[in-house]
Amino acid sequence: MATGYVYHELYGWHDTGTHAGLVPADPRRGVQPFRHFENPEAKRRVHELVVATGLLDKLTRLAPRPATDDEILLVHTPGHLQRLTDANDTGGDAGDGGSPFGRGSLDIARLAIGGVVRSVEAVLDQEVDNAYALIRPPGHHAVPDSGMGFCMLANIAIAVQAARRTRGVGRIAVVDIDVHHGNGTQTVFWEDRDVLALSLHQDRVFPPNSGFVTERGAGEGFGYTLNLPLPPGTGTGGYLEAMRRVVLPALHRYRPDLIMVAAGFDANALDPLARMMLTPRGYREIARMLVDAAAELCDGRIVCAHEGGYDEAYVPFCAHAVIEVLAGVEEPFPDPFRFDNLGQQELQPHQEAAIEAAEELVDDICGPDAGQPAPHDGPPLPG
Ligand code: ZN
Picture 1 (tube, protein in one colour):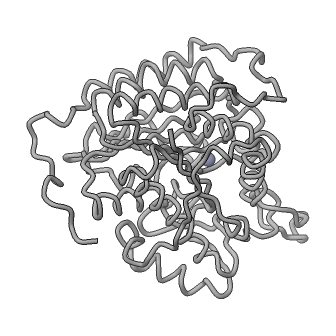
Picture 2: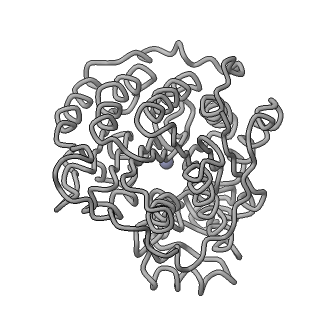
């Protein structure tokens, strides 16, 4: 099994400044300069762990290239790209006041998108079986006309649209396991039945009041957005039940040609930006289910793109577990933290109720032979 792997040192040079976590440093408000939660360290330490354990030797390095304006405009408005371009010499904010970036960050964001595009192309062209893009800045909150939630541009959504254009891929499922709602991906594909947007997240963390089970898409895309907001405190038991009863049945009904994973690790038991309890073992099991589903449904084609995850010490072990599964490593690297025995790691009744509410919606998802014309069944458009 060949697993593609993208990482570039410049991903760590995207400068989010001196915020105290989330709050702009300001001595007048008593906010001492510190560092932004979305800083390079968690991702850099994922890469260093992948090198240090020797996992890198089992991976196929893929070199990212910068995404073009054309690719970015497959998803974003010209106005949003222009605002980022105008601020690229000075630094600024990507649009919501909570997504700071430094000089040259647009160049790095282009390289992040390009890392996902390259991964998808390598998988579709059978250069590798599957791939992990360890990129930064993240992307799943960015909407067409604005950045949001530390995200400048919608990395995965752009890669999806680029793959449809250049490779003529029919149906793509995006499984978002970041602890925050994948609102950007949902917005882009709201009326599109050729992309199944699935998001598992902690109920109403970010964006606030977003990601309800009742948000299901519209028009032709109705039913092809599926949200599963889980109660705070959900651990491995609740997540695996959600995978078994919602995500896997949804994938099996939809029968995608490619599975994309918004691989956020902020549902980990130590994360500062959420209150869930996943461990490396939990992430490993989730990854195994997704890899097995890809093997059954789409010749193993699965591409993970890194999103959030803010505990610098713990995230590396969570991400390492997922990359091991992609690479078919049988003997996992030991988890030194041992949070698998935390109280209530097993499924709780109120978590089950949330899972049931989403489970009822899975039957509305139709496979490729549902009788409606696939909008993209012609030859691939020129790239
Ligand atoms: Zn997140």
